[in-house]
Amino acid sequence: MPRETTDGVASRAIVLKEMRFRYPGGGFALEVPELAVAAGEAVAVVGSSGSGKTTLLHLVAGILNPESGDVLLDGVRIGTLSDAERRNLRSATIGLVFQDFELVPHLDVLENILLPYFLHARLALDAAARARAERIAQDLGIADKLRRRIGALSHGERQRVAIARALVPEPRILLADEPTGSLDATNATAVRDLILRQVRARRMTLLFVTHARELIGAFDRVVDIRQFEPRSER
Image (tube, rainbow, N blue to C red; front, side, top):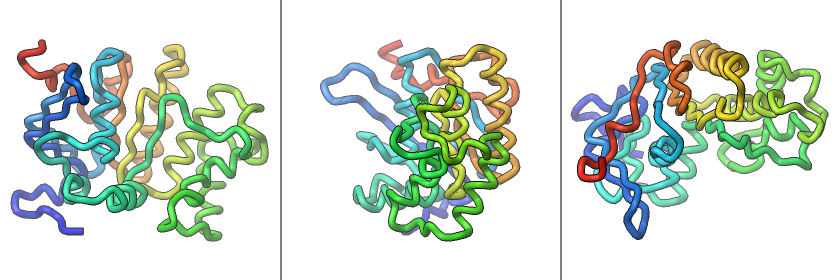
């Protein structure tokens, strides 16, 4: 895939330039004149519920397409790619931690962690991948749960499974969508710190969206989603 190099953006993990998005039928919109996230940077995106944080993540991941402007992922203009090419780039580059976890109840913990390897042909489920899954599970404190079904886990354990699943393919970028949204302050801080430790140990880039402003002090930078509301709609 061709990479943009003329203005140095290829050295950045995520770049949005003059990007505008609006859901069909009007209503909610985002305008991002410029947002750049350096490789290895941990950025918190803060805002209230319904303010567009998840939409921003979906635009970065190529799940949604802007109506104008550019979104670049590792220097690739994802708006120029086909659906299949975007899926391949996403599976090669991004780990996603969903707010509602999106775990598969009839699979055990290890199978849920390895789920990306069953869904994406480009990922090879070999001995190294299995060993990495077990090592990450150990790091996250769920190594003794690998053969349990999801229904037998606590909320916090399910959250750790979701984090492990995002990490095991060794993505360069991690997108975390309100991963602490349903937790109390103590547990929210613990999960934030857990994610930051894993990201920094692996030198990954992180976009962590949250409505909890008390969590943002540990990040390299904070972006307030309100700055991307169209001026006429503020």
